[in-house]
Amino acid sequence: MPFAQTIYQILIAAGQGDKIVWTGSSTGDFSIKSAWEAIRQASSRRQLLVDVWHRSLRPTISVFLWRIFQDRISVDERMRQKGFSFPSKCQCCEAEETIFHLFIESAAVQGVWQHFAAIFGLCLCDAGRLTHMRNAAKYRGVPFSTNGIILEVQRHLRTLRLFHWESGLAGAAGIIRDSAGHVHLAYEFALGTGTSVLAELTAIWRGMELALTYGLTPLVVEVDATMVISLLKSRASGKWEVQHLIMRIICLQQLLVADVQHVFREANGAADHLAKEAASLQFTRVLHHDDITGVLRDILCLDRQGVPHLRRG
Image (cartoon, rainbow, N blue to C red; front, side):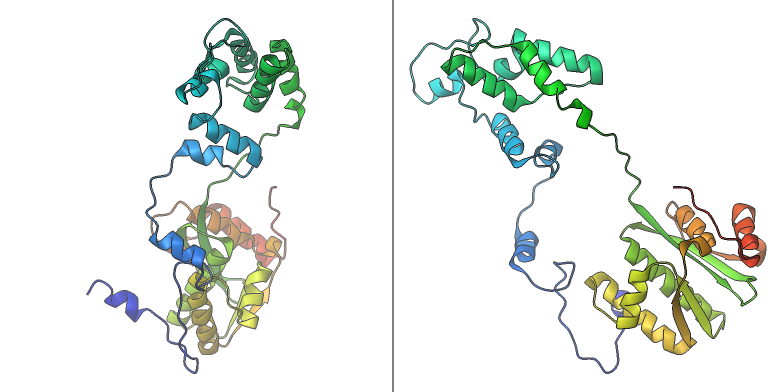
C-alpha cells in the first residue's frame, strides 16, 4: 500500500484524545476561507496580476492598473464602443484617444518613458498622474505638460530603496558532543522551503533519534530559538505541521532523559555553520569525528576553548 508507511509513522500519543485536523489551514482548524481555497478551481498564477495586486502598492494604484489591463478606462475609444457618438481627439496631440495611445504611444508620454528609462533602464511612471493630467487637459483646459509629469515622479525618487532577498531554502543540522566538547557525531539535511521553527524542531527530533540509536544518554539539548523552547516546555499547539514533531520530541525526551536548554547563537556556531551548508544537500549526511574537517573543525576547537563564534551580519 502506498500510504502504509506514512500511516505507520504517525505518532500515537498515549493518554490523549483524538483530534480532527483540518489540513486546509495551517492551524488545523476549519474555516470558510480555507474550505473555499480547497474547493475553488484555481488557475495558473499570472505574474502580471501578482505584481498588480502586490501588497506594497496602494489599493488605488492596483485598481487603476487592473482597469488599464481590463480595458476599463473611459477614454474616447471606449466611450464610442459603448454607443456614444462624438469625435475623438487626444489632448496631447491630434491623434485618436485610445488607452494604448494615452499611456504608451503619444509623444508627450514617450518623453516621460524615455527620461526614466535612461536613468533606471526600465519604464517608471505614475500612470494615475497621466490620467489626472489628461482629465485636466480635456475638461479644464489645462495644457498637458511632459515636464510636469517628470517633476512629479522625481519628487518620489529619494524614497526608493534597494533590497536583497535570501533564498527560501532551509536546512537543519546538529552536533552531538560529550561534556568535554568532544564530538560523537554531526548531522545535516535539507528541508526545502519551510519556516525556522520547522527547521529547529526537525533538527532536534533527528538529533534525538540519532542519540537514541547510538545510546548517547542522558542528553542535554541546546537550542538558540527561544520560541521552540517555549513550544516544547508548554506543549503549546503551533501549526498542525509541527504538532506531530512536538509530540515526538516530548516522547524522546522521556526515553533519553533529555533536558532542552537555551543557548545563545554565538555558542551554537557549529550547528549554524552546518545548517547553512545543509540547505543545498540532496540527502541526509551523518559525520563522525574523523569526517569533520576544515572550518567546522576550527569552530568546534574554539567551542572547546570557550571562544564564542562571531557571525557576520
